[in-house]
Image 1 (cartoon, chains in turn purple, red):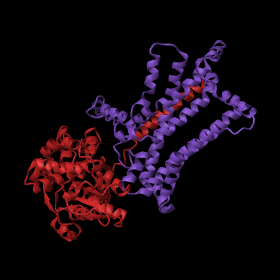
Image 2 (image 1 turned 120 degrees about the vertical axis):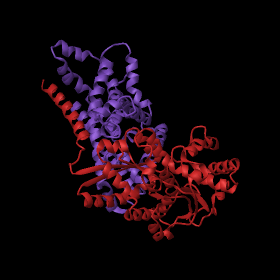
Image 3 (image 1 turned 30 degrees about the vertical axis):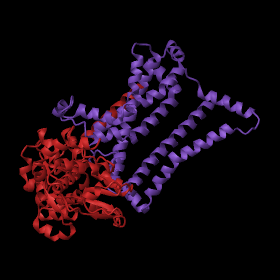
Image 4 (image 1 turned 90 degrees about the vertical axis):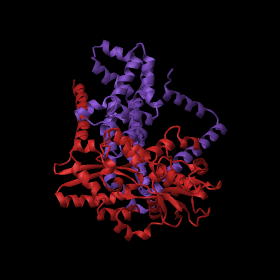
Length: 290
Length: 338
């Protein structure tokens, strides 16, 4: 089912270069359409964010991103990402492992369950957690007795974010691990490696690229998630306010420049993600050449 | 083996980090934390009021009080408090929303009598905001029924402010048609046929009208209208006061179960009482709410347009009756706005 895309790409390149330099209209039209599409839906809004952000000058811009509540929103968002991404990475590897290397009943069901967060609206997910953990909910009364607060506090935000970002790593790894098969791992075991040795020396190097890619997507979503978090957050400034929620608050307070300044900060985080991703890609390719 | 330990360490590190941040929010002992859960248009009011109260409390008791704010649509904020948002005080848009919290036994039933003036330290009313020069010549509620007028107001099913808007129009219609309910319903449904965007809250409607430039007239709180003029310049907008409108009483209450659990009753009660002092009333008036204090009101008299005001009890009996008749599922609003 899966095809090694990189090799396919190489063959394709050769095929194109071997051909005479002929004007390929289909290609040109497609490229133009894509460029127009991208600039309309990506570039123009992005430029708009930055112009709006600097509309009232650099002083307003820096005041907006260094203000106390803003910094606390940044801190909270980073904390959520630092906790969510590793946990969902461990889960994703485990899930992809059991789905691709073992045969068992209900495998399709498990696969569908992993993808559930893609299908469920984040707001609904948030509401489910509110119902579940609220003092009038299922688990809430017990937790309240123990003095543990989940909803309208940091743990609730982390749980909601984990739910929404759950499928990313597993989804990236499953095709990679399927393509790889289990022959190499079986060889390692038969040569006397234990489970961990096999994982770190045989499996991990081959899935590294897919894993990192999944983690980056997971991270981007964890930082940007609005819907589910907005339901469980309670919007307490300086305490349960994440970056996307802070943008909304600023916008609602007529601080349009500040709102866009903060939005531009989030765009910068996205750029950083892109750069890291490209760097990983470059390193992986280099390693493969050596 | 080394790697296994590494994995273990990572897991331990992450869980302890999560715990630390979850628990580490307790502050030093000689400070007290207060959470005020409020509705949309009070952001600026409480920002100013909180600063004042912090100084007052520190001078009085030597204790530092850290006040956090949470804002949103009045109904959804009430919902959050019921779902466990630990609000020490609820300062919402209407008594009905605080009643809803009281019905969950979080606030004692007699809350409305605990503070003066129905526990509403400030009032407001419903006015119109139009484009500069009033191109559609909007003077009173009748003008909103004209087919060529595009109206912006939030959804009364979920927004407190929107309910005041709706009831203000309804009250005007009752006055106009000598309490003929059928004619009043026809009048109000004509207005809602003209609604172009039905936002989820008062602040959302304001940004729709002001920032996005949609609609000819915004029906909104008087304080919200003044604030919009203030924040966004008077070049593009002007305020129109209708002949008759409703006396909106945004209510405040201490959330009993929360303050008893946290031991913050004393400071929470003083916080609300401070709203009634001259200092509090001045801040209220400066932020375009109508103060209850006669002296302060006299001082700021010129700021507020003269409008004939009726109360909800005059025209609708009580909030409970108005809610059941108009906004509950199957109520009049459902048949008006299909």
